[in-house]
Image (cartoon, rainbow, N blue to C red; front, side, top):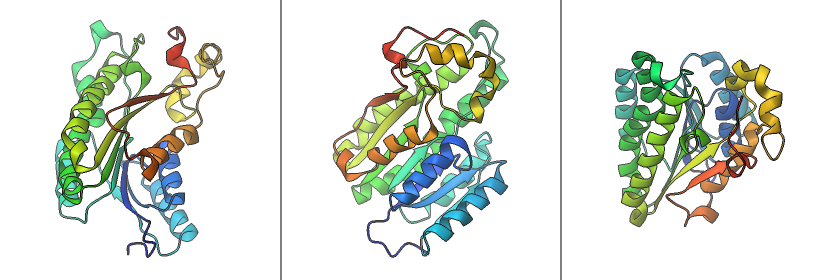
Amino acid sequence: MASDDASAKRVLVTGGARGLGRAIVTTLAAAGHDVTFTCNSSTEAADALAEELRGAYPGRDFSVRQVDLSDRDSVSAFAETLAGEDAYYGFIHNAGQSYDSLAAVMDQERAERVMQINFWSLTKLCGALVRRMTRARTGRIVMIGSVVAMRGSVGNAAYAASKAAMLGYMRTLAMETAKRGVTVNYVAPGFIDTDMMAPYENYRETMEKQIPMGRFAAPGDIAAVIDFLLSPAAGYVTGIEMPVDGGLMAAMPVHR
């Protein structure tokens, strides 16, 4: 059941069960949006979050969709489902996967999986959602990228390439939809204090010293920017890449 609050708008978030995704979902829920979010393996955490939000905001709509973004058929089926539903006001592509390897020795199969999750699933879901947005002459699309799309980072070739592909796609989609009231933007976090950074724990102190603000971002730091981009105040903001990195891109490149 949709919310009775006239200010509530339907938003879709990929990868919403844990970490940054969870922060995005809870922040947008607090802002008055009805949120649908995807998960793959974290079904228990996703269901618990949806139940928690239903308790906190009675009468509002919070739902979980299990989708394997690494599987083309799964993404296509989900896109078909979305195309048949009521229009979404917002789409935040947060789901992502990393793969560490030197550029010259990347495993193609693993690199293609990263590209499928980070980039191709994005384009497929945008295709399912954006036409309804342009017809309604309103909509907000936010892509969670990375500063590595704009700066070199040893061992991150596949991940950086996927995030750079997102950046190029964002710029084009923003130009194609601007006159119809749809904004498309790219948020580029630096290092975020989530489970994704666990493999780099031994380097954390060194990495933090090279961030001007001296710390990793909290998930809420990124979620607050997304909340702004979905707000009426950001109605004239489109086609931008927005680093949220504690000053990292303004400083010298980080070395582990």
